[in-house]
Image (tube, rainbow, N blue to C red; front, side, top):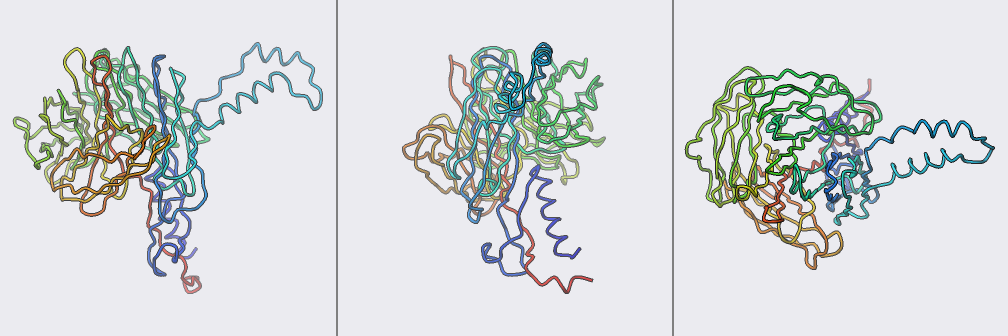
Length: 520
């Protein structure tokens, strides 16, 4: 094999490692605007997303949304389809007996065959399918039957493909607004901020997109170290299915704060924690950014009544975390919480109170010299006591090029952007609405060390929900989150989603040179 071919394979393999699965084609130097022999930056041509099962409540109302931004240089053809990940139910035993008693004739279809065909057709029917880049589509589902979704996008829909599910639960455990961005499959996840306490009902949702089973280990770490688990090892997730696991069934220990570590032995899965509280509602807890000596938790609501930080450092080393708040005026150190001590292998929690005090804010956590890796998340409460709602913000990854938040509304959407290290310029585009509207674009300057709740553009003549796409133009790094909020019965429903980079572009070495001189 020649050296250029090896380089192309290495580039595609690295991309697959970060996006779950992805593919690119060999670059066309003229189309990419690159000279022969140089690396070309090209749109990803195939990718996948997984959405967990939204709710077990009969009162749940869920909206699924799918969107791909317009990307220069993308293929002219393609599809983006999300389908149910639910396994077909096993055939009824009586149905089998009835079928055995029937006489089948050539060219005829049995009653059982008709039922199976209808079931197959329903399972394979798309829940969401994009028609064109730049315009989101949505679908609604009610009750506990709303499914987990598995999907792929290729061609012109692959670069920047994003999906979101937003669920409103009117009453009961977890009442409120719950939102989560659908994510790519991976092999390892960290979730600081989960719980096995009696007041909480926390599930780890595992979704397998592949045609073979995945085997998963779930490790739990509490305030004194790793918890003894009974059935946390070797959990099998069937092909193309979703498996919710109630965390309190994995251990007899009841702890208010737990860090969940998901490790995939074989295959790959999507994973997210659904954290439901008896009194303060609930939301999704997405995975924290990979363990690092520097973490950013963007977009804590300015009217947060309570902020509780949960952090964990793998291994045996202790660490003193430096805590700073990126506020509209710059980086400040919260009084009384200048540093927080973490013991190696033990989950620690810290009450930061009304941290933001009426202003936009993001937490910046730093280990000395970045030498000890940490994962972290905050639990945020809004509203007055007795009518409070909760949400989670994990440590986020920066927006390197572009990111998108879905299911936005003209009122109740807050886009929070922070540039903790250096100033940045960003472009924000509001897409057309799901039912109509004209895209709008604005540019913003984010000062160094600050967080800003920006007045995001809204499509002209908006009908339905819309997408907000954030692109970095200069400076950075940039982190962002989006908050959706409404008020129901005096309770401030809300949900917060950090915006990860959509990883829609990849640098691929050029392969147009004469390879004969490289062959031996």
